[in-house]
Structures are given as structure tokens and as C-alpha cells.
Image (cartoon, rainbow, N blue to C red; front, side, top):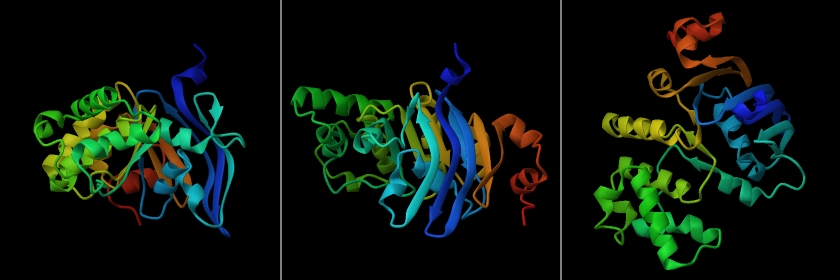
Length: 255
């Protein structure tokens, strides 16, 4: 097998500018299939901006200019003929705070396949059941499917948001600090869910928690001032980082 086929995402010489501000600088990164990759680094280092490049969410921001290439499989997602709506079906995203729609639990999950043309009730029923089961929420909500999703706890709402992403049958799931608003028990559930998801999806997470990165990820990427300082297997990064800046950040001595 070609070495490149081991990777789901390949980022080549990526630079991003907000007006005259050079935010991402020469990013080169390969992300393995069916793995969890954590992006770490101080606030403002470019983690979330990089994450949003992978499903082109930065496109909606005024005065953004992006130079470089990102491959999803063998496809350059910044090619002129890219269908961005289809891309966002392939690359789903879960945000920092749960964004449950003010609809029923059922409609929250069914809304995603409906957008992509699924209307048959039995098909939608199966998608909703399967998606909620995969995120470990089915048993808790099976008898409440037509009640408001806003009645769920924050942790359950975040699981619901993951289920909504899964309902679109993505290949990649992006998680932007998905546990920052959650209590420790809910955080543990999301981390367990991430591990299960990595069996079928490629997962990329932004986190400020060193403990979470160490516990939950296979690979870790340390960013600073818009650049990748170091990346590699999580165990190696946390026990024997190659760069002193990485060590200082991981151990809390970062200045």
C-alpha cells in the first residue's frame, strides 16, 4: 500500500491570512485514517483556524485568503471545482458549546440527512436510531424522541450534536474543544465516544487540556504562533518531546 494511503488528510504548505494578518504559516501535516489527532497550543496559536480549514468553514469570513493545499483522500478540497456543501457532508464538525436545535431530538438528527435529500420515513427512522445508538444516547432518549432536545443535559446535547454529524455519514469528524463546557463525567463520556468513533472515522480534536490530549489521542500536534512546532505519536510527545518549547508547554512552564 502506498504510504500516502495511510493518511486521510494531507496538508501541504498551507498559509492563511486574515486581511494582512498571517495566521497560519507553512503548515504541513499528515493525519492518519481511523485515528484521533489532537491539536494543542496556547490561545490564539491557530488551532481552531487550522481545524476549520479542513471543512472550509473559514471561507465565510471576510478578507480571508488561503494559499496551499489540503487533500481529503486524493482530492484537493481547495480545488476550484470543489462542492463545498458535499465537502461538509464528508467532514462534519462539532463545536465548543453544544448547538442543539430548538426541535425534537428526532428532528435534530434527521435534519442532516433531510438536507442531503433523504425523505423516506423508514430510512430516516433507521438513521436516527443508528446515529443515537452509535453515540450511546439511544437508551436514554428512546422514549423521548419527540420531546425538545433543549431538555437534555449539556453532555447529552453534545452527544446529540455528534449523532447529528454521524447522520450525514461523514469520513472525518472535527471536534473544536467539545468538552470545555462539560462536567468531568460528561467529558469522560465524550472521550470514550471519540475512541469508539475512531474505529470508523478519522477524528481531529482541538483541546486546551493536556490531560485530554494525553488520554484520548493517538497523535498530537503542538502549535505556536501559527506554526507547527512538533507533531508525533502522543506517547512520545508527552514523554520525550524533541523541542524545548513543546516540553515547556506540556509541563506548564510555557511563557
